[in-house]
Amino acid sequence: MSLRDVVASGLRRGLSGQLKGRRLMPPELLASRRTLAKVVARRIAVETGIPADEILGRRRYAAIVAARRRVALELWRAPMSTTEVGEVLGMDHTSVIHALRRELGTDVYAAELKARRAPQMQVAS
View: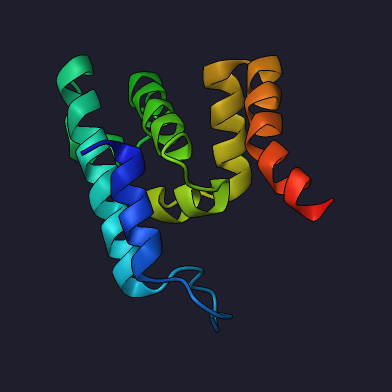
């Protein structure tokens, strides 16, 4: 099952209507996305040699931050919004945007963001 399939199944299960409070996602959907983040972090941990709990933690060593940026990129491409990625990783959405721009480069990030928004713009017209 691909990352996209895991997230899509989570979206079908929840997130209906306006949610109250600071929590943007229902607890069960947030739990499934945290599980997805752990799966991605474990895979990147194997590739980098950095423990998954360090990648998902708060430390700011350069190697750990680089691995965390890769996790954020994969979750964003899953697709999750920057706000959802931030909530799962314990970051602000603007920090996620910065991480994506650092990982991809500003031009590539802008192009991918534009491509993601293109279907939404066609529906609105």
